[in-house]
Each structure stands twice: as structure tokens, then as C-alpha cells.
Length: 374
Image (spheres, rainbow, N blue to C red):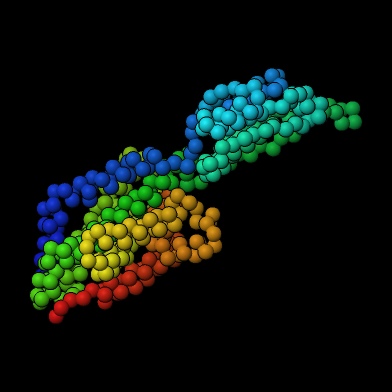
């Protein structure tokens, strides 16, 4: 036990002796959390909206006013012809073109129906989908209002159409604040990246400076060396998590309905898994550059297939099956369930068991792959 404590003490001294490494470990992740949480948004704002009004009626002006009143749309121009509008969209000056046909108001009154032409710049498919939803909501609300005003006769009696009003109830994030959804996930990424990169480069650094060979010929046992090497990064991961949770509460006001003890318990096991991956990478690389490239290769896959930016349910079936081997997926699910839903241990038993199993398997492989000269 004394040997492990001496190695741990040596590692902490080595970490805090490097003045250039301290900002990378503690300051940069916090800056990234603050910046990414404000920048990463599913909302689409300042949509460049234009229209072509062939009718110039009270009904068409009222419809246009609905878009003017929306915070999501920014009316940039009014065109006389569709060709002019299309040319501006090709230049990137317009995102949406709404074309109101001639006799728009008359058809609404006489035929109770009419058509609208909406052109959307869909180079960014995700943004175009959100813009389409916004437009459909505004037109749907306007249509409901018009139908309420248009009375019709039935057997000589004046009948007003009946409307169905839907009042949605938003659970777990009733203000629909995207930061409430994004901050826990981004915190998971930062904890994972710091611990994975540092652990994967740690033993490789010993190889590069030649101290690993000296340690290998000492009486230090394999398990003592590995525990002493990885324990400081396990502690650092929990420290970064603690600071991140504090920022999430104080800066972003993210609710914490569940048990913090449960979050720390899961994180403790999760960090063992990540440290095992880092150890496995360091055992099979000879330079820090190689370790960094390999660690980043896996991180990119883990991040993109974690469900943080793209819902897993929207992925192809083969991709959804691959995400089952992605540890970040389970951590993102857990931290959101506990913080936002108040989930208990019984609710996360499956994810906890999977991460525990992965941690045992990967650490076993990493330990056996580490070569020590006896």
C-alpha cells in the first residue's frame, strides 16, 4: 500500500509541477463548458424571410404580420417576382420565400380554401426542418383564426365552426430551454476527454523520457504501478465533474432533481472504464502523438454517436446497434435522467450494469497488455 501511495504522490507532484498543464486540466474545460453550452443550440434564429404578395389584401397583410411578430424570423425583403426571390436565395441572402397567390383573400371567403407557396433553403437539412416547423405553426395558427372568423350556413342557420385547442404540457424542461438539455451532455464530454487524453498519454510519456524502463526493473508490481498511475486522473475526473455541476447550477440554472451521490457513484465506475481505455491505448503506442491521435479517433466516434447532437432513434438500425458499445451514450442518458427526471438507482440499473461490465473487461485487457520486466 505504501508503494501505491508513493506513486500517487509522485504523480500528483508531476501534474502540479507542470504549470502549462494546469490550465489545460482545469481552466480550458470550464471555458469550453461556458462557450459550448451557449453556442450549441437546436433553436434556429434570425431566419432571413422574404415574401411575394400578389394579393395585397387585408388577409395577406395579416399573414405577413404574423411572421413579422415572430422572434425567429427577420424579414429582409419583399419581391415582385419569384425569379428575383430565387436569385437572392441562390446568393444566400434569403432563407425563406413565401409566395401569396392572387385572389388569396377571395378564395378564403368563397371557397374556404387556398394555397401558399413556401420555398426553403435546405442546404442545411436540420435547420430547414426546424424552419418548416416554425412556418407550419404560424400558418396553422393563422388558418385556425381565419376559420373561426368565416361563418357558414347549414339549413338556413348561421353556424360557427368549432375549434380544438391543444394545450401541451412539457415535462422535465417546461421552459424548453436547450441549455437544460445540452449542459449535462457537454459536461460528460469534457470529463471524458480530459481523463482519456491524460491517461492515454501518461505512460507513453514515461516511455519517451526513458523512465518506464527504470520503473520496470524495480520491485514495483504491475498492479501497484497501474493503480498509482491512474488514480490521480480518476480524482481529477471527479473534480472536473464537481466544478462542472457547480457551473451548471449557478450559471445555467440546470435543475438537479436526482441524487448527486448517484451521479458520483456512476461517474466513479465510468471513469474506471475511460481510464482502462486510456491505459490500453498507451500500452500499444510509443509516442504521445500516436496516443493522442488514437484517443481522438475514438472520441470523435463516441461524441457523434452518443445521442448528444443527433437523437439515437433517428440513426439507422446498424448505427443504433453500434451505439450500444459507446460508453458516452450511457453517461449522457444517466446524467440527464438523474438531473432532469430525478431518476433513482432502480431506473438506471441497466446502464450501470453495462458500464460496470465494460469497465471490468477493458481494464482486464489493459492490465494484461501492459508488459513489465520482472
